[in-house]
Length: 427
Image (cartoon, rainbow, N blue to C red; front, side):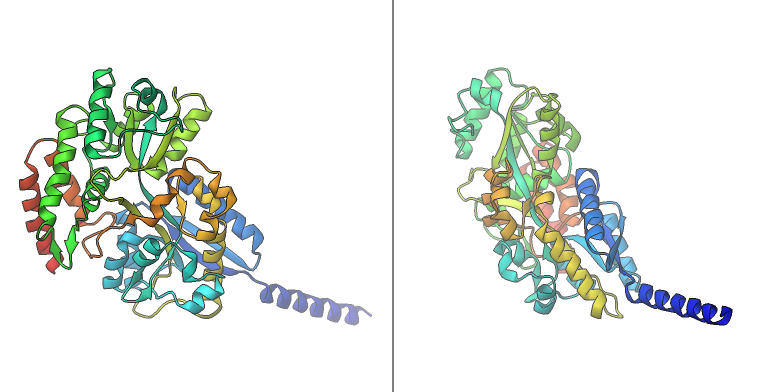
């Protein structure tokens, strides 16, 4: 009898072990660069995905945003130790393709995720594509927007009955509004990062694109009449600073503080600051009503700087993930897109149109108000010198920012960019 019981116990143990093995979760190595509010939201999404999918488990690691993250990706791929999936800025896709670190996302991959190319805004999809191949799956559209202080605009007669700015549709009208606000005692009528790279680049690129200008044409930097358009964009920004409409050499945090403290009537910044002002307002620490709209077509055409967070599958010289693990990764990507309404409350516009078109998103303000910019968004140049943390951002810091603060003329700045970036682009 004891022998029979012992045999049954062994057999039972083997069955349990076999069952456990057969239902072991597929482990997914995930890398992202998301901190602050974005990081909190993504960690919550990952936790919920893991709860809902006992067969798939995401092991997430967060690294430093910008060039440190992309250097880590490049180094890991070179030695075959890359993650299974990662977040990626679409502005970095051209350089990543040149480096060979992105695996193509096929139609079969999208089908495994329950997605299709028609689900996405054309501008985002185009930016995710290189050489006719989809290199990443867009997750959002995050762009430059115009924040505004309703109280200050109302006092100046610049707030319409719909609660949105009025009389600022052209650059001349906007400049007149800034002058009026200054006369009424507003310390810094419009705030943006005038002493750094990101904020300077986004405003400049928007003003350039609104003239129909191209920063790059092939490998040529500010070629032909694009040089004059770039000078005009820099001249507008220089004029704002010289007249005291915008702050001198303001770092990012200072530009945000000027608006949140009520010292600026407008702020040009990314959608990612929406949670900041929402939280301050809820805590009754803001002191005024605010809103955000797409940047008006000041220079003639509706265009706005934009980028997208996306999901990409890295590859090494030995290849990329295949089989069931690849299907699992696409399941993750599909789930994240279909639940991106929770990402949208960080200010982002969902790149996945079924969510962007949903009633829930249409009630989300101010996102729903400025979401129209997804159709006219202008992504960084298709070049290996463009993108987050790239040489163009260095030029914004070392050439554009000094120019708008009066240390060189717009003409001198454009010449320097043509020379320094032109050499890099040709290589």
